[in-house]
Image (cartoon, rainbow, N blue to C red; front, top):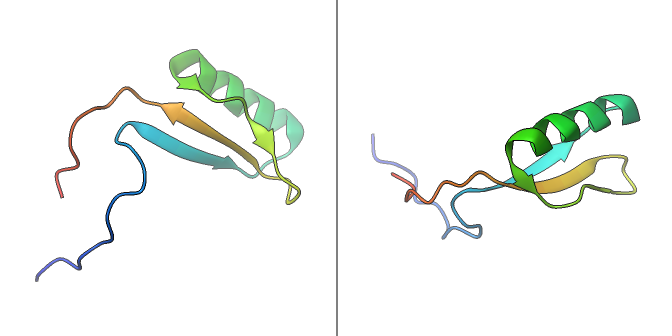
Length: 65
């Protein structure tokens, strides 16, 4: 079965956009755990209550698909 074409990549390989939808205590623990392993932007909380951040996972490998 042929693959469905996808639009051109709008992000860089190795950068992960993260959205956390949890209470404040859980969010703080998840952010701390991610910060221990990855470089990340400062988390920001949106009006909808979700916290957003980006992680640099260090991957520079091209996307195989």
